[in-house]
Structures are given as structure tokens and as C-alpha cells.
Amino acid sequence: ALVSGDACSLSVEQGVEARLGTRLFPHYGSRETVFGGAVTCPAHEGMHLRENHMIAEIVDEEGNVLPRGEYGELVITTIGMAAMPLIRYRTGDYTRIFKEPCPCKSPLLRIDRVTRKGPGAEILKLDEALFGLDGLVDFHAKYAGSAVEILALTLAEPAQAEIEAAARRALPEVEVRVTARKCTRSDRPLYPGKRSLENAEAL
Image 1 (cartoon, rainbow, N blue to C red):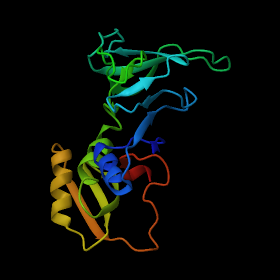
Image 2: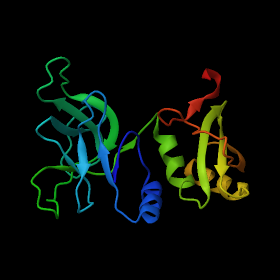
Image 3: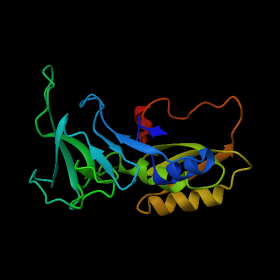
């Protein structure tokens, strides 16, 4: 199964693989790069870059190129995009380019799992922590002042204390408030679009 469209936490990948009985192949891309970016191979040790479509570099906060193996921001230069070419486009995504060859023997470079720094990082931490809990179907998180409020939907009667504890471990620097309830047939996905930790004042 190919996974794309939004960041997928390791806990979600493992849960889906266990239920489907098949491996997932995460795909990295973006609208700016016409979605083509990198895809996981059968070795499942990173994602191979589509080097015929783009040039990828890893840079520090000042834009200096980092050696392979070091983590930093992924910047992209597109190849063959005449309408909107990108030159060292800063994606805001945080990863590294492996310096070792892939066990699958492909000569294409590989990037590690992609995360975020700054805005967008918190929701990925919550995804990893909460979707690893048995019975959690979905959750929505938003800022309410300096606190983070979370609505969680569960298959059975909610274990609110367990959800709160996991959320606080993921975001130890902020106050976390959790409301949990059992999911019903009328419930819809709590994020109709891209997942993010929203500002309550902007809703």
C-alpha cells in the first residue's frame, strides 16, 4: 500500500500494516514539486529521491549545505518545470540524506523520515503519541491561549487519563486539556484537510 497526502506517523504505519497484513510504502512530495519527491523501496530504510525530477540538499538555519548524514531542512531545486521552476526552495521539512548505500542496491539517494520544526511540529508529535493508543480513532487539537485542547474519539469507552498522559509526554512544555468520547456512526473525520494544531482564535 502506498501512503501519501499528509505526514503519517510511525505508530499509524505500524497499526495499518498489522491490520492489512502488508507493508506500507510512504511517499514524500508536495504541490510545489508536482508531488514527485521520494518513495520507499522494499528495503524500507528511507525514501529514494526522484533525482530525475529534483535536486535535494540539506541545509542549516543559515542555508549552509550540511554533509550527508546530518539532519537539517530539505531544500529542493526542480528539474524541467518550465512554468514555475524552484531554486533551493525551502520546504520547512526536516530530514537527512543518508550517506550509506541502500540495501536494495539502488543508486538513488535516500532521505530519512520527514518531520517538522517550528509550526507544524506539535501535531506530528501528538500523532505519534496518540495514534499509538489502542482504540483511538481520531483526534483534533487546537491552541486555546497557551494551552492545547484535544478532542479524542475512541472505539470503546474513552480512557481519558491514558490519552492525557500520552499527550502531555508529547508536549511537556504546554498545558494539555483532553475531552474524550466514544465514536459514533455519524462522526466524520475531525480534519477535513491537512492536519495541524490550530489556533482557536482563528477558527
